[in-house]
Amino acid sequence: MKKSTLIGLMAALFMGQSAMAQSTQEISYVEDPAQGYLFNSFSNNWFISAEGGVNYYFDRNNSDRDFLNRFSPNAGLWVGKWFSPIVGLRAGANFTQVKGNGKDGGVGPYGTFEGGIKYMRNEFGFMADAMINLTNWWCGYRPGRVYNGILYGGAGYNFQYVPAYGKNGKRDGWERGTNDNLTAHVGLINNFALNKHISLYLDVRGVILTDDYQVAYPQKNHIDLQAYLGLTYNFNKTDWSAPIVPVIPEIPNCDAVEARLQAANGRIADLERQLRDCLNRPVQTVEAKEGPLCTIYYTIGRSNISRVDNKVLGAVAEIMKSNPNSKYTVCGWADNYTGTDQINDRLRHARANGVEKVLLKNGVNPSQLDVTVNNGNLNDMGEKYVSLDRAVTITENK
Image (cartoon, rainbow, N blue to C red; front, side):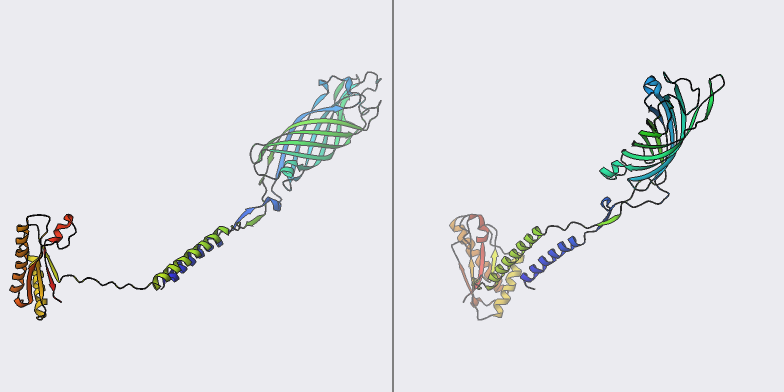
């Protein structure tokens, strides 16, 4: 396979793996509040609340009473259900004690109204409210939120109980009054979650009582301002689930990948060009210089032939005997960096004669041998390489 084809396959494999990695990104599924909220089953999101507090009753004659003497207790018990994170309904029973100044419901001594007559009555009623969670409406539903502001409004019906007076004109109990009344109210619950099921709240409420409690100055509508501290317990499931939607991974910007691909293509093209130039380059013929048939090396000052060199010369002798018409030159060498000229000349002759002796011993015809010496250096590569100059070379004569 050509190198250019192999490089192209490797680049294609790399880009294919990159594309596959991008295409196999998993699609995740999450709740999306933007799609609304799922309605829970009817048994979920119910609550019960108990509350108690004080109220302050307004009418035209109450200014004749002391300010603190106009406060009186009230309490309530509610059961309700949230149908969504924003909308809910509740119904309950309420007790309110009203303190006023005037003639009350035709009950008690009529007397003269001048100066006013302090009175007190108890009202027990049933009410129903529609509720809107303002926090979830304006800020979006969030599980685990601590504070929620809840606006509500509704209506009810109150039964009235007033003091009963004996023959001596003193109060000796309570009896049903004659002025039961319709009520309308609106309020704001400041709800603080203590945990998933229990919350504490402050409820501020304005109530309109639609009845005439005073004989001297009839007035059909009276306002009662109320404040409650309450505790709520939420039953079963208390949170809300949003629809599950798929989230498709964002498609990556491919500009960088495309740039890398173009760069890779450029490198491949450059490698292909280099490969063509290499394949088309003319082959240079280099004639190798023919070396000697054999070279025997010696240590400094030595001319004896080792056992290994004897075996080598035995093989050389066999070549010479197989070519009886060829002649060979046996040349002795010594380095010119050590020793004297006399010593080196003696070593050259001794080395050449020793090789000749071994060849003749192995059956080589003396007429095939031309024994000589050379006063130069065999390699002449400098004093560092003198070991290469202590030798005997055997070359075939051409």
